[in-house]
Image 1 (cartoon, rainbow, N blue to C red):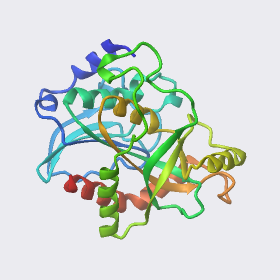
Image 2 (cartoon, rainbow, N blue to C red; image 1 turned 90 degrees about the vertical axis):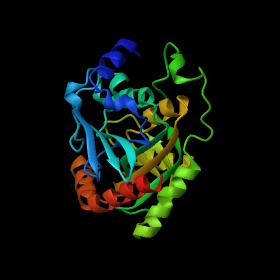
Image 3 (cartoon, rainbow, N blue to C red; image 1 turned 120 degrees about the horizontal axis):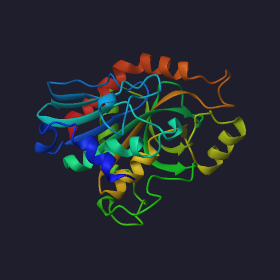
Amino acid sequence: MNKQTFDAAAAVFPDACFREPPALGIVLGSGWGDSLRTDEVVARISYADIPGLGASTVKGHAGEFVLYRRGGRLVAAWCGRRHWYEGAGWEPVVLPVEMLRRMGCQTLLLTNASGGINPALRAGDFVVLRDHINLAGVTPLIGPHNPDWGERFPDMSAIYSKHLADLLHAGANRLGLRMMDGVYAYNSGPAYETPAEIQAYKAQGADVVGMSTVPEAVVAKACGMKLAGISLVANLAAGIARTPLSHADVIAAAEAAKPRMADLIDDFVLRL
């Protein structure tokens, strides 16, 4: 990782972003970008204006940082994410986590859209991440050790906070949303998985599969942040779905779920 890249990115953010530690950081994945309800916007920055980050190349990712207040809480939200498969290296993938660390943020909510593997799931359901499986076999921690990110060999035995998961479940119960706990399988992408791969992931204990979230989670956990992960099941995975997979279907599913996604995020913010 290039510290100079992160320093250049931090220089773009106004002083207001570092004056008060955000109560929560959020990374909004595919289709989640319009899920914010704000009382006051403190700062707004386009990804294209942040060195080392740059505009998202994937449809469904708005590409904007928003620092806002809601119910007396300061929230730092990344509307859209960069992915390893985009080919720009790890810096843009984990830069949001590094900026949150520099802001003093201690709690992070990661969101994504995924393919459902567990037969109990259907499109439109929510899954709170209990754990994950890194099928890509690589992480942003590979390379020279960055002491700002904690120990060289960080413990990952309890990467997702049960307390934060309970808050998400409480919100889902109040809102009447279908939600279960599950294990997220991370594949680097951008190709969707084969039916044989999905069956292998199922045998390993995966409930959903996707192409994001795990790199940010690993770095955030190493930095000592408390984490929660929430996934919208956008479609059924290969071999389970009866039709070919497409990103257009992911966007359509997220569009249909927008009001529920916004309700869930807002409830979580207000429960903190």
